[in-house]
Amino acid sequence: MPPSAPLDERSLHLRRLVMRGLVGGNRGHVGSSMSPIEILRVLYDDVLRYRPQEPNWSGRDRFILSKGHGCLALYAILADKGFFDPSHLDKFCHVDGILGGHPEHGKVPGVEASTGALGHGFPIGVGMALAARMQKRDSRVFVVMGDGEINEGSVWEAAMCASKHKLANLCAIIDYNKIQSAGPTSEIQELEPLLDKWRAFGFAAIDLDGHDVASLRQALRKVPLATDKPTAIVCHTVKGKGIPFAENNPKWHHHAKFRPQELDDIYAALGGRR
Image 1 (cartoon, rainbow, N blue to C red):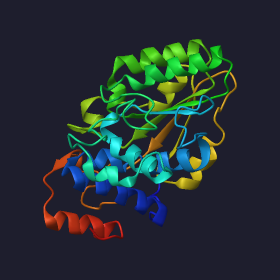
Image 2 (cartoon, helix red, strand yellow; image 1 turned 90 degrees about the horizontal axis):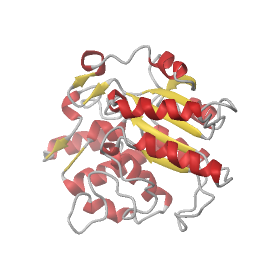
Image 3 (cartoon, rainbow, N blue to C red; image 1 turned 120 degrees about the horizontal axis):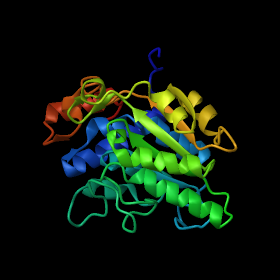
Image 4 (cartoon, helix red, strand yellow; image 1 turned 120 degrees about the vertical axis):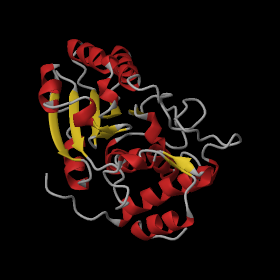
């Protein structure tokens, strides 16, 4: 796909909120939190039904970040939307804070499932989608997974189940940045042809530029893509998006003990000051 357009101020703002958490904890999954920002932005700005002051409202749509290590992307958008005060980002990974290194249901307002054990979030989403049907609710369930995560067999077991039950209210979104914790997905476990795999498992599947807000908005507003199939959207993204020296760099999958010059360079790239 051609290079994405430069990030706009909304996307830069959300990345600065991610950095607020990274600085607060002096650690975190940098690359993994930067790649899905536009996906979460469009979901929470334009697609999902929710009430920040009533996070357990039964009529809400459900969102699960199955790649729980990228939690700062979720924390940033939840703080931005008023689920909790942004000051909680300053205590990321602190023993007296609510925001841990992986999202925890029941502790963080707006978090629908405790994730981080990879391959678990999508099966939970299948259960939620089935429950919505049984309870005759029109809620939809969106699950973001990492590309390395879908090496897990539990993802494909859940996909078979979703297809069997024709869960049109379920949407799988793959953050396809093509780099997992130990290196390129093409070297560790080749995923291609990825679209064909999802279609073979009975999903209505498309792919797009995961940083193109207009394309994301157009696709996600159309979910379900078929009335008798679950949806899969493969989002081509860049690990570390927005930080030039972290982009496509496996060394920035996780980072700790930031040096002052690193922080200055990151904030310069994101249009802010620390």
